[in-house]
Length: 366
Image (cartoon, rainbow, N blue to C red):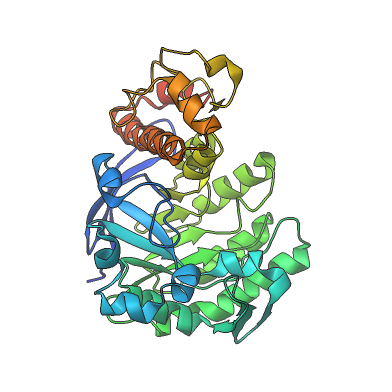
C-alpha cells in the first residue's frame, strides 16, 4: 500500500471543491490545507509548538537549502527532519526546482541535471533527479517532490515547451530513485498554454506518482492568466490522488483554486508579509507601520482576533515595528498564520455544509 493516500469525503454542491483526508506516515492531514513554509526546517520566528497550537498538520521545507546547510547526511544521522525540528506532523519537501529557476544567472542546466553555485559560499554543486530524491529520502519526509524544470514568467512558448519536455524526461528518473515507501509527487508544467498543460498532465498521470502538483504558476504572471491555468489543469488531475497547487497563497487565490478542485497549498506570503509589517484581516491587508494605528486600542479586525495575539494592542505592535523589535515580526506572523489556519478550516466546513457562497463573501476583502 502506498505510504501516502487520498480519501475523498465530499464535494461542494456549488463548485468542484473537494473535502478529503491525506493519509501520511505522520498522521492524517485534513484537506484542503495550507502548508506554512519552513524552508530550512524552520517557519521564520515561530516554533513547532506554535504551529501545533494553531492546528497545522503539515509543513513545507526545501531540499536545496537543507542539502547545503546543515546537510542531508547530518539530518539523516539525527533520524530525519521530523526529529531535528521536533515536528510530529507531516512534511513535504520541494525538490529544488524552483530555486534552480531563481538561480538562473549562476547555474547550468541540461538533460543530466543542474550544476549551480551555492548562494552561501559560491561552491559548485550538481543536482539530478536521482540526487534530489535521494536527499529527500535522507531527510525522511512524508512527501518528496519530483525535480522538474520550472519555466519563468514571462517566457516564450518554446521555452515553456522545453521546460515541460525536460520535466517529462526527468519524471521516471525521480520515481526510479525513490526508496521503498517514499512518496513522490509529479509536477505538471506547460506555462500558460492549455495544450501544453494537457500534454503534461496526460504524460505524468500515466506514471505511478502518489500525488500531482500544478507547477509554474505564481512565478510572476498576473491573476487573469493564473486563474484559467489553474481551473483548466485541476480538471485534468486524477480524482483519486491529492492535488497540490505550488506557491499560491493569497486568500482569494486559494479560494479560487479550491473551487477548481485543488487540495494543497503553500506560500511565503503570511510569514513574509508579517516581517513587512502587514496583518491579514477580513477587511484586507493592513500595514501596522501606518500612523492610523499609533493610538489604536481596539482590534484591527474584530472578526479576526486569535488567542496567541489577542492581548496585544495595535498601538503596541506598531511600536515594536518602529523599534525594530523581533517580537513585532513574531506576533504578526502568529496572527497571519492563525488567519490562514482559520481560512482553511472554514473552507473545509463550507464544502461539507454547502455554504460556499457565504464563505466567498466573508473573504471578499481579504
